[in-house]
Length: 532
Image 1 (tube, rainbow, N blue to C red):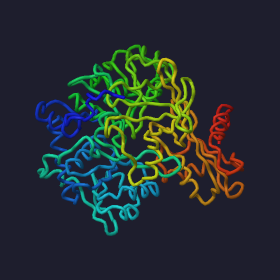
Image 2: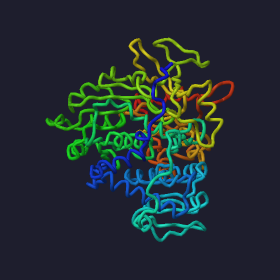
Image 3: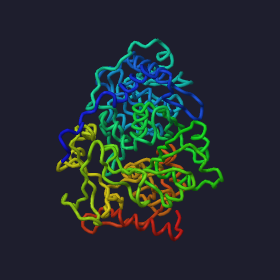
Image 4: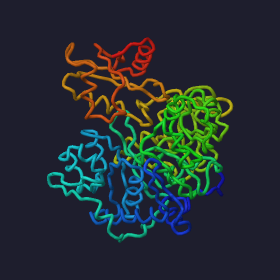
């Protein structure tokens, strides 16, 4: 067990709101935030002013302590303003993927019980306002073109004039490391997506593992990850604590990456594995290594990581983590084999890690089992899922968080992800619930039954393969079904491949679909060139 003198409680200086306040006081003119695409910059002072204006605007529309604020915002700077603005107002922001539509969005908004929905004007124009209005008290529209909108019985407010007014809130209420910083929806497995309750301590620790010499005061961290992911929020928190610059673009571009980091002089890039794969696939240039980046932090690594490091003149560090537990397996620049995902983290929150069998009994080195974790540091992990006590109890059973991932560990302490026990698909840096893909597909009148699985894709993530049993032969085809998905699913959830079949492999006793067999069938078919 950890020693008693370890600093389990986080000081206020490690919490994003207080770190920003201190920076605005001590280094007000230093750059805190930068959009590499537009050139827009926010100093610590201007960022704090903007956040207090957002907080005051939310208070005007009725947001107060204990309320939840749902957001659907595209730009990361807006995501930061809404997140910390809600905190300054005493509320909790719940960011949603702005691509969510239809029944998926209704389910999420219903689970949140949000007082208001803050949404980009362009996003709002694509929503069914009647459905959304049933689930929030007020719609607050951000950006140009916010009026007019017709919405039955629910006020629609333009955020612009509200944030232009002098702030009435200048300081947050008392915030502790154990308070809820945000609620992040992560993929469901056998049910809808679940809202992970994230304390400020977890928001801090997810990215706090990065080596101390990776970047320091005034230096830039490039991060193209969205603010509806905890990774984006935690990386921004890390830059505040180090008094560094958070540099972003809305969407990652492999072809623009070198220009982005060169123009902004970023010394760290915080990305996900598929982004590294896309970057590795760009045509090599003689000057690829002539860039300011020292460290690339990613998870997972990609095959050929050593040649990637040589080509771009960088060191790669990696980690294994989840929204519920932050990062528990990490590396320094000695990252080990390309398919390893880290070693047990030595720093805060000093996690205990086991690989166990179905009875939670620890297995030996080299044996595959489920990764489970716990920590003695209070609030360093999520306390559970919003409004889902049964799912919380299942995940945190026996006093350990059960990851649902199958891993093994070698004699050197390197951990390797082998498979996912839970029915989750990783696509373009997003966790995708097969249940939700299947639920939407099953609502098509010509689909009798279906099953979605993930198979290894070309860039280190998964491709979604959907097997469909039609109501009658020829009732629906892959192309028509893919077009039908367009307005109903975010692009990262649309299957890459759709196969129409007569039946699915099933358990002989329960007739439950055997997903592991489907994954094998899908992988073999792709290797043999079988299409839709």
